[in-house]
Length: 241
Image (tube, rainbow, N blue to C red; front, side):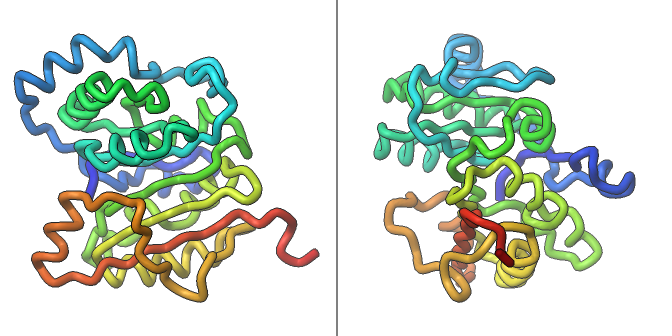
């Protein structure tokens, strides 16, 4: 369960635009996180702007770009980037302590293929990311919003999933992991109804061995929750052609 606070895209009805899908935590930063934030923000963070960005400008290559929404403390994010130097990673998070923690990991490991945007993810996608330029989205253990009246706040729901699909390249993917079965079922239905997306598997995906376990995953397993993984791909042609 990560901490990113996300509002709706402006094409959505007014009552959707004001819905927050994450609660922004205001936990204190450690001294180390503060130092990392002050020392490395300019080096590894991309400032939020209401203009489209060119990935090649920041990564200095044409490698595939994967965006992670809500990386929490970023431990798994850093490990994935370290294990895959042939791919570029962009983490979006508003939890300042998490940004500070991941900045330290980037600097220590010299992860030239990882950048951070500290801002509302939907606004980033709407205003900074070109259509059909993202190779994949990682959404690991998003807030499940367990009560039925709050299901509308879930990140992996339409019309939010329509925006994700719009930003994906053809053949790109959305990889979601959750330890809440109700959310997994709901997300599978929502993604299945999103134009141009299709599940790579008949239902839930098998565990991906390359993905490091997160602290939220470990907490879920301690509670005997089942970990469900979903992988949807953007079709290379229209569904009905």
